[in-house]
Image (cartoon, rainbow, N blue to C red):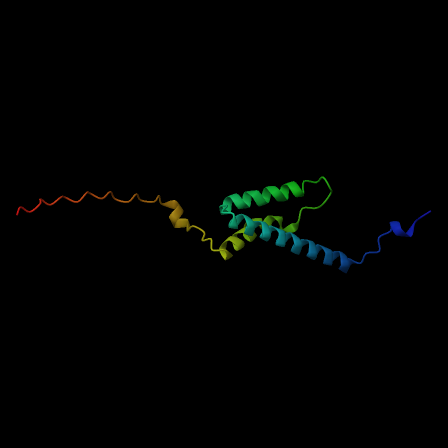
Length: 116
């Protein structure tokens, strides 16, 4: 004997709509985490690592939830948020050359005091 409630009658358009909502929800979550970490003073690289670790933990397969398609875009989303909040990415040329140490100043020579 078959039971009607065991057969899914969900339309394809509804399923696609759920995927879009899931992706939008995931993107909002990543952006909120990036904003929080930026406001707390985390570096961009540390924030990326933290968010990726959180995504890996949340979608570790325990509950049979698929990893979001946008999980690969965590780096981009984090960079966008950091830039919007005033972070400026270092230039590639600046990374290649080591910063020069400032030249040491010589102490000024003392002038002899005038005799009265």
